[in-house]
Image (cartoon, rainbow, N blue to C red; front, side):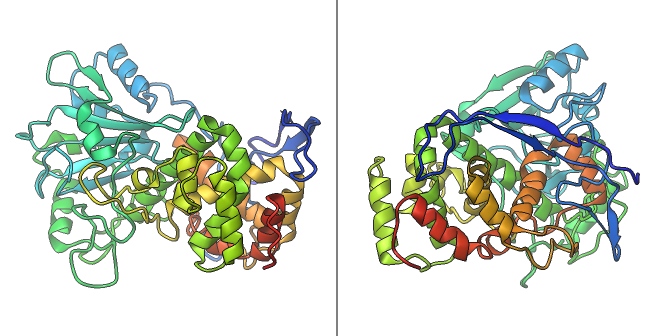
Length: 476
C-alpha cells in the first residue's frame, strides 16, 4: 500500500455567527477551508516500529474514521444491539456474544472481584468488553448461580450530547427485554452516570492487577495465569468465554496480557485509554452543548487554571484573583478549577472519579489514563477547539516546534499544532472498527501524555495569549 489513499480532503465551510470582537479575534465572515481528514500511506519503518508518515496518516486503508458495521454485524449501540437481536431472533446471551464484531472479541478484561451487584470469582470471572474506543461497554456474568447471570449490563456514550446511557438486556424470559436506565445503575455510576474502572496502576479485582508488592501496576499473578490458560485451552466451565479472541503471546506470572490484534497490546493500559478518552469526550461535549455561551466566555480561564492544575504555582496570586472574579460573574462560588467546571455543568467529583462508586465511596478525581488524567484530556479538546475558531491561536501553536517527534517516530509532528492534531485523531476521531484496524499495525504509545507534549512546550507563548484574551495583564 504505497500510494496515498483514503480521504485526501473534505471541503468544510465554517460560518461563525458570533459578532466580530477585536479582543477575541473571532471573525464574523465565512471561512472556506480545505481540510485533510486523513490519508493512508502504508506508513514507514523506524527501526522495527511502523510509523505514520504524517500526523494525519492512519497507515491502513479506511472507509471512514468511524465506519458503519460490516454486513452481518450489529451496530454497537444499545438500540443497535436490540434491533439486531430482534432481527436475528437471538434468545440468549451466548447467541449474542457469538455474533459480536471482531473488534469486541479482543478488547476485554476479566474481573475476579466486582464492586457492583453482580457476582464473580476466580473460576467464573466477569467479562468486561471495552471495545477499541471505550464508547460502548458490556459487563457479562459467567457464574451460573449469579442472580444476575441472565442480565447483561451495557453502557453507551451518546456522541451527540456527551451523556452516558446505562441499560440492561434481560434474558430471563424467552424473549429478551431492554431496561433503560435502571435504578441499580445510579448507585454505582451516579446521577450523571459514567463508567467505573480502576485508575492506572491500580485495577483492584481485575486479572492482571499486580497482587504482589512492587512498582509494576499491571502484572499477572500466578493463579490468574493458570485460569486464563485454562480458558484459552477450552476448560472454561461456561460457554460465555468461547467468543473471546486471545493473543498467541505466552502468559507468565509477573507479565502482562497482550490483546490480540493490537500492535502494543498491554491490556489494562489500553482499557484505560479507551474508557478515559470516551469519558473525557463526553465531558467536553456536555460543556459545549449544554452551556455554549459560558463555554465560549470561560475557555481561556479554563486553560489557565488547567496550567495551575498541571504545574502547581505557575499562576501568580493576581492572575488567580482576576480569574476568580471572572468565574464568579458567571455564578461560581469560588475561583477554583472544579468550581469552573461546575459552572459549565460538570461535577468533577462525579464525572472524573471513575475508580469509585458514585453513591458509596469517597470521590477521587485524579483518575489516570497512564501519562495523564481526565482534566488534561478536556484541556486538549478545548485547546483544539479554540484553534479551529482562532486563526492567531492556530498560528501560535504552529510556530512552536515539536521535539523530538512523536513516540518512536522521530520525524513525526513538526509543531505543537501537529501534535495536537495527532492526539485528537487517535483519541477522539478514530473510532470503532477503524481504530481497531489501525491499532493492528500501529498503536500511538504515550498519546495520552498531554501536559509534557503539548502544554509545557507552548507555555511561554500560550499563557500570555490566554491572559490577553481575557484581559489579564499581570506579567509572567
